[in-house]
Amino acid sequence: MVRLRDARRPREGITLTQFLEQFAPDERTAEAWFVARRWPDGVQCAHCDSSRIAERANRRPQPYWCHDCRRYFSVKTNSVMHRSPLSCRIWVAAVYLMLTSLKGVASTKLARDLGITQKSAWHLGHRIRAAFANGQDRLMLGPIEVDETYVGGKAKNQHASQRGGKRGVGGKYPVVGILDRATGEVRAEAVYDTKKDELQGYLEENVRSDATVYSDEMKSYEDLPQPHEAVQHSSGEFVRGEVHTNSLESFWSMLKRGYVGVYHRFSEQHLDRYVKEYAKRRSIRELDTIDQMTELITQFWGVRLSWSDLVAYRAAAW
Image (cartoon, rainbow, N blue to C red; front, side, top):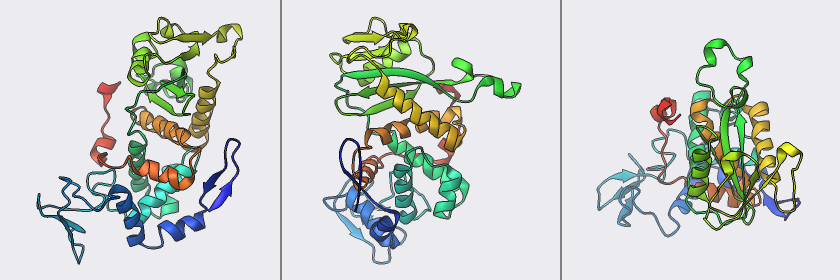
């Protein structure tokens, strides 16, 4: 492994050459890596969790057969890889690229790097983003920073027919984020608006009631049930001892650099997945690359995003 320098702690990265040698020299090696992380104690049925399984010698129609539910399955079954025609080599390479590209990777570049079509790369990327968004049910302990921002192109730069439905400042979409200073974890979510019920509801779902919360002076944060202090940005105050939201501001900066420099646009119906991708990558940035990959892979199982669901516009959610 290559030792990378980090301002906070040394961490071990993996060069592209090392990655190819270790994870993707052939399809069976890549598949075995996924199998070992999904079933560290031995293969179990992906449908019923039974351990009474048999491996098919010819691996057709799928590698494993369950004696209890009498169904075939593979490591891809009931995961973000469900029914994917792409090889495990492609999947593990995509995981590596999306984790090591700090500002994100566009589907056009992912397609070129992996040798697949842009349509396949776009679906692949969003399936992995669905895994980035998984596993956020633990309440954060604090101290907590909370802040909101707006993402998107300005309405004045759009054709009049494209401006309908835009909310927020300058025709952009609102996003709320919280950061746990104790663990460095960041969570963020696209929201309908930045009113009190919306933002305080998000805090209630993610933060313990006794956690100290730091915010700006926005009225939506008034009367929080948690201990709360705010800086007065309107008065030119950005730091008052421990009271600030500078760490979240740094996260917003990375998100918007990716928006401008890599993607150029986040569509409304997919914005939340992009935001959660950046949040998860920020949360695990101090882990070694292999540990980042393992952390993401643990969120693959039980999560699915079909093509029909991906392209369906859920107007009701907005």
